[in-house]
Image 1 (cartoon, rainbow, N blue to C red):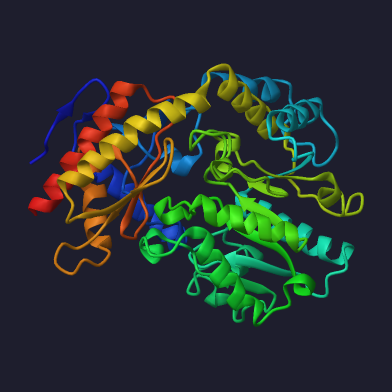
Image 2 (tube, helix red, strand yellow; image 1 turned 120 degrees about the vertical axis):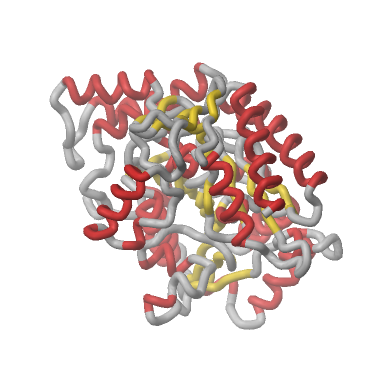
Amino acid sequence: MIKMIKTKFRRIVTKIPNSNAMNLINNLKKYEVRSMHGQLPVVWDKAKNFQVWDKEGNCWIDFTSTIFVANVGHSNPKVKKAISSIIDNDLLHSYTFITEIRARYIKKLIKSVPKQFEKAFLLSSGTEATECAIKLMRMYSHKVGKRKPGIISFEGSMHGRTMGAQMLGGNQKSRAWIGFDDPNVHRLEFPYPWVLNGKISGKEKFRHDIKKLEEKVNINKDIVGFMLEAYIGWGAVFYPSDYIQELSKFAKEHNILICVDDIQGGFGRTGKLFAYQHYDIEPDIICCGKGISSSLPLSAVLGRKDVMDIPDVGSMSSTHSANPVCCAAGLAVLEELFDKNLIKESERKGKILHSRLNEIKEKYPNRISYVLGKGLLAGVLFINPKTKKPDADFATKVCYKAMEKGLLLVHTGRESIKIGPPLTIPDNALDEGLEVFEEAIEEAEKQ
């Protein structure tokens, strides 16, 4: 039996998933690789601001922002207008030949970010930005006379799906296909709250773990950089601030670059322009993507000019670097973020989001172990009430229940659900989505 739903922001008029969606999905599976599948069975027809529609007239509140891309809202009018202006001017691609929109965008980007970022390199995907950062750090090691180009990353981290990015990643299973580990990549244990468990500070944890690494590696001669995910993506898990501040102090003492992968957290998502700013440090390099354009394939590496200008003229570019259509979208996003005060709005709405999620956690203490994140980013971690172990199946049930009721959540496939609506979502739509989220937990629990 179909449960019809019609509210100000949601509309469910068919079974979810409906037959048309399943037919299209099954047809697609015949011709498309299975690695592209695994999301909730909703076929998007239209997305505007914080809502998503299918062709049957069902409408969802979107708590995904297409995995934190649509920060300034789906189909943002200013972004659409900027894209159209370039298309109408018959300029779809220019390789690395210079365009006016590229010059305008790069200038606006650098003027908008913290002052230590003096130059930018534009690319088309987050993993491409990570690869670029790896190359820059390793080239820097030769410049400053390091013996080896060693990089320290973290267990549990995810930096993309290309070889270099997965070499740095903290998931052994994900990088097993490579066939070997890079001997110049070293990993520290991520300081999860359940690892620290109130028994050790972040500062103490860093000093303890780096000391163990120093027993195996000559830090001064063989380490050139730290690669940090601004937060661990699968659960929106931030580092303790004292951990990162101690890491920053250590890096300065040993001439080690700090590179932050802020691809998921940048451009207002966490209530600051970049997520790393919650740690009160100044990285040397930052990787950006996703929310940078709110729609089109665009990423960037930002950094100090003495690092960014190491590669020779013409030696590091990409086919779609600084694509004019993407640059137009990126420029419009920056203007929207600052003109509409969306970063402050993310901070304000984030307080509503986290306050409500913590109320739900108090209601279901045997089901929800942690509510994590900052700003309009949250990770809700579920456990089995009997075993007290992570419960991925329950998280999946909650995602499906919410989908049936008109709410889209980020289904991680793990024990976590991530929440990240567009920064433009109105308060009453945010409240309604959170009500649906609680209802979905309640119904999944009854089952």
